Length: 197
Image (cartoon, rainbow, N blue to C red; front, side, top):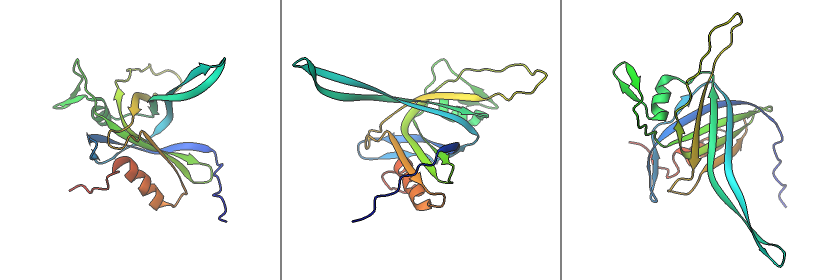
């Protein structure tokens, strides 16, 4: 009898390697993304998936329960979110040397991955396959006697792909397990296994 796989009980100590890719096509036959882009200096993440338990009653008790799952809301806080990435993620437009926001903004669908780093050097990989971000608030404050760094926050909602109905992907990888890390990235960004010309 094979020994059961040992559970990793190491706690999360950080966040690293956040990437996104613009979704180009999502059909029942295939899904394709642009090249993934690294977004450095993520500080905090929050991912919450809507769920509701519905109950059917009979004979004065609960006869059956079912879970309804909705979208996942996400919020990322960064040391700074570069303007170029805001253009890509939020549907803003380049106008020469300027960036403009029109009255109607159409952000693209994107996929996002990140690593929750563990105390033992391993990581939990988290992937969201299809969602979009909304315009963040513009906030700043004056410089005072003591220096305080600002930050940028971006929020969005994610759901499952048409291609395979996958909404989120998770994996635990050891520090040097590049094969499993690549399998995770392929499941999020290249599930059909096709190479880009």
